[in-house]
Length: 223
Image (cartoon, rainbow, N blue to C red; front, side):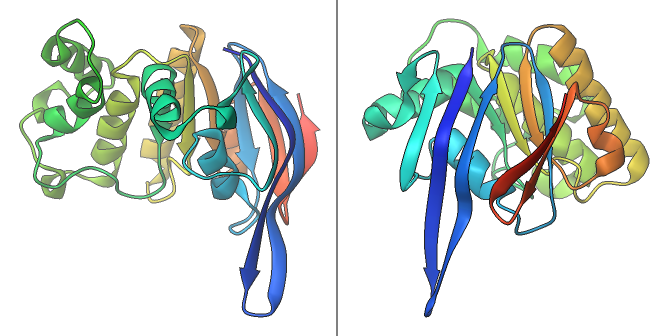
């Protein structure tokens, strides 16, 4: 999957103040890349990711995925596209509390009709991310690192070509954070493309490239 972003802008009004959360951002993300997007809180990273995933509409600009403009698709087509080809790990705790860890991971598989066995796939992913013993646990019983691993398994359940992760280690201790990024690196070596937003400069060095956002603008790229 090749991602091409052209002059992307998202404008907001707060009282009498107008500002661009994302301002004229352009970049391309090659198949198999592992890019870490850095910047302080409020720099626009989350807004950018929410547009890339198709959850938030830009005010101007284009998001091209293999030359398909994401926002020329209708809501249903965009949802199907996201479900089939993109995995998303949102910021914070995102699992459904009334489902077991395994059923949380299986859920995206059943949002559209597809063949295969979601139970077997989820169990394979739980083994891959190191939590096979937690499949019957509920989110309230899991630590922050365990919740992140379940969210990663959920993001991988439909074998996406691209993973977008928003501050995936924000509430983790350094050892667990390093383990999560090691998992990302391992999956990237298997061909999954990653764009991970993080404020942790040390962990961002595990990527193949570091990009920085400041006040809504992509200000620096280190390949």
